[in-house]
Image (cartoon, rainbow, N blue to C red; front, side):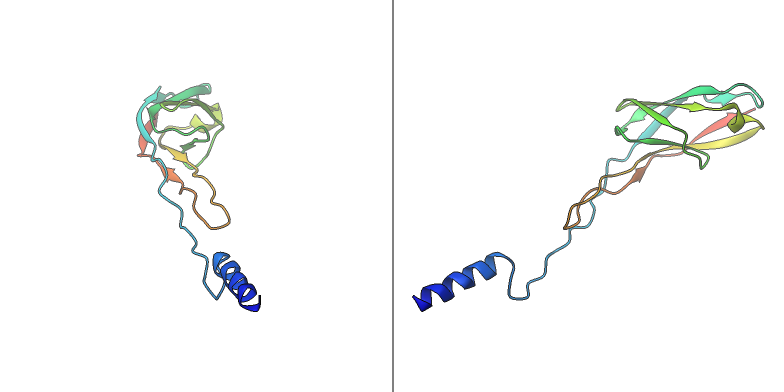
Length: 129
């Protein structure tokens, strides 16, 4: 009986990762990289009214964010190929060029890591005349 108890404890300990074994942490995996194909409109008049920007492309996630020259206005997911965001008049008050990208935030990992990394699209230029 003593031998069976020792064997049982050994099996339990090894099966639970005992005897000093370390738990491997899985690093985040690459996420889906979004791509912008078109901005509509792609120009606006300085000092003009705010407008809705439509971003067409691919690999947009349900929680994708449009980045407007460093700002992140509220983004509406339409499909995996289209996003929309409201650009207020204050963001086009002076003539400039604005870099527009899309970021897929990624997904969190669990207790042992995993998940996906945040990924950002190519840059498109919006012109405020």
